[in-house]
Image (cartoon, one colour):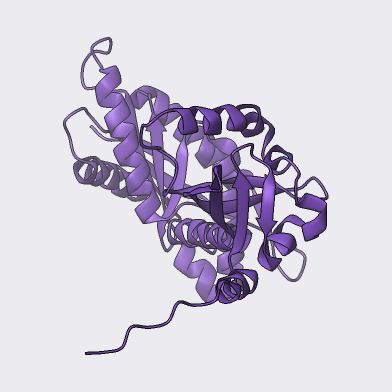
Length: 317
């Protein structure tokens, strides 16, 4: 049989706690601080001698400090199991310079020694973890934004357009279109295409073509209504979405957009102004219909606008 191990000297436990990476705190039943290790001194900003014998409430947030002593006393007097002790919690402690330091804590009932009840806790500084989580969340938000944004024009891309169209369709279904007659609905879509854009690229180069697209994107943002959605679907094609709008109303907004594009100059390297025009097809997105079907209707209307001479708005029949 293996010989029994000798009892470890108490000083070894003390050395282990003193040099532990986690902050360690011990209080008595009157919530006075009896011990803090080196990590707790670094976390709180206090030297050991400054805190020993002081009430724990000086380290606690005001709302918790007002209740803490009473909660400890109620626990000692009752025989019920604590809902707090032994569980990991997150809150904050007050630093010596009054800053609130977010921490993760696990508190324990250490029992009684010489008739005095003691409680201990391990505390971990979570500032670095929270900062990293915030940076990761910010990075994820940037990546998600980039995934939904056309990098050249800064307009929503096709993926974003389809997602926002789905949300608009759901709202339109909730609102209902009972107050409208005929084929009108509370949602309309548009497909806009720059006229003779290939000629612009061929004559002036792709850098000028990109500048034209940026100019048009700015016009789309400004000429539409606040509730309207404009997106770049690809190439020189743009998608329009008109929430809570009848087909007749959408045609009026599209006409305003068309006219604004025709008036907006793109300055060429030689200082001359280049003007472009846009053709737009508009269609209903009726309740129960699919986005693809409505966009196909708008595409056919756009083809008709091109066939009739370009630089005009045509509504789907």
